[in-house]
Amino acid sequence: MVTGGDPEELAGDGLFLTHEERYQASVEFTRIWRRVLEGETVDYDGQHISVKGAKLLYPPIQQPRPPLYFGGSSEAAQDLAAEQVEMVLTWGEPPAAVAEKIEQVRAKAAKLGRTVRFGIRLHVIVRETNAEAWQAADRLISHLDDETIARAQASLARFDSVGQQRMAALHGGNRDNLEVSPNLWAGVGLVRGGAGTALVGDGPTVAARVKEYADLGIDTFIFSGYPHLEESYRVAELLFPHLDIERPELPKSAGYVSPFGEMVANDILPKAASQS
Image (cartoon, rainbow, N blue to C red; front, side, top):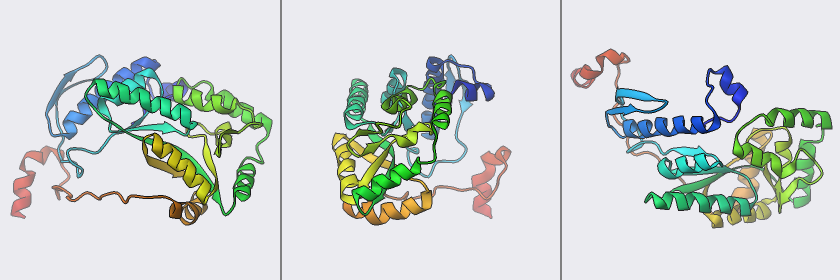
């Protein structure tokens, strides 16, 4: 779930809520969504969202419902995460900053009698040697001129997302000091919003950095790289052999799927399906 961070983009979609109001609306939406997905018929009268008799027509494959992934660095985001989500995501900040965020959300969740899991979103630039990896990182932004970087940073500065502000603060729009933590490179964030950091190095080095985050409590890693296909092969060949990877379990049941598409016939679908 993404609450949104760009006021201009949101205005183009007809949404004019402030940062705090958007999180209030997200809280209401998520409370309704969770109950509906778990099979309840929901009446809810909120400040931003109201429903009457809301229900799910077909059960989800994952039971009792799909897990909710959510990211945010503001106080309001952490409050929502502590109350309602299963997986709290962070962008690739230095380990100390990630540890602080994990501690804050855990404390909030504990007060509500809940526990949450944590994930991180990072790019990866992995090569046979550390030197080759850093050369690849330099090449990735070699054609960016200062004017392009300045325009990108000016565009990103309008965001009211606290997470985006934290990403921008890592490099300050300056390409001179982009290794913001050992092997954590902020070059991507010079022109890209959102996930703006990459782990750079050979397989064992990047794996060691991944383990540092895992030791903080991160159990899910969402990786990417540029170009996507080529970097996927490099990660699989050079990084994965150095990681202790657990294969996720697949859903065991597909649930009931109707051969009919008309919602109006929902009440008679199970009977009709059984007679066909």
